[in-house]
Length: 252
Image (tube, rainbow, N blue to C red; front, side, top):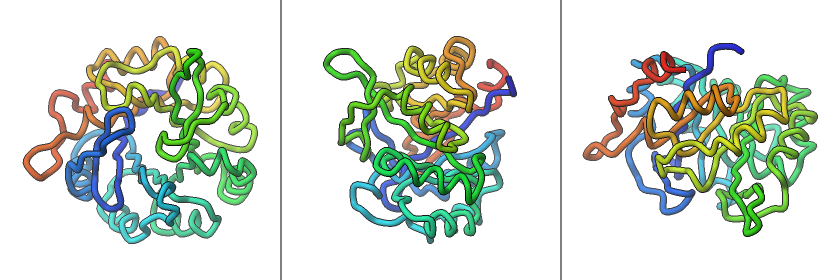
């Protein structure tokens, strides 16, 4: 296995940086550009930006914000939220993003993933899967920021997305999101064992051992976190000094 990547996952509500707990009640925590400037100084491998309401509002990505992020960001970054057209993809890449992230639209129109893969390459596409257990204890995919349930099994859907040309899976446990209670290792392992493309574990990280468990026990190829990296410091975002990315990487 290649060295696992350490990826801050930053949530956007329109143009502000927010944090959520179990995908609910987004709390504003600052300017995303300030966060980018902070992470430029740290040894993170890449950044992920997810606009959590673009799809529910049925609007396009904020291209102006993406352009500003690209100007400030010294590392590769991926952007997701509201992407439904090839022209959107072209514009996001043109502005400087290295990868796009597709969530709800991959469920609605799987053929779109195949088209994007053929045009831009497998390495440019991340499929975001948000999952939680249903009343029967089965993992199921939820779309539109966790608001719409499906009967889709995350592992089976990941297999389908790999066949359609996805390059990576960003797997988030809705039940663990923002709780800082550790990753859902069972969910991660279930999906990671089903596909050959990298799985990025997200949702619930709180301490260094959580990251190593996701990699060593659940076979994640990368670890992502939000709340553990960024927190409210007055009206600005600051890096949580207890969880510097270089310390995480050394523990993997």
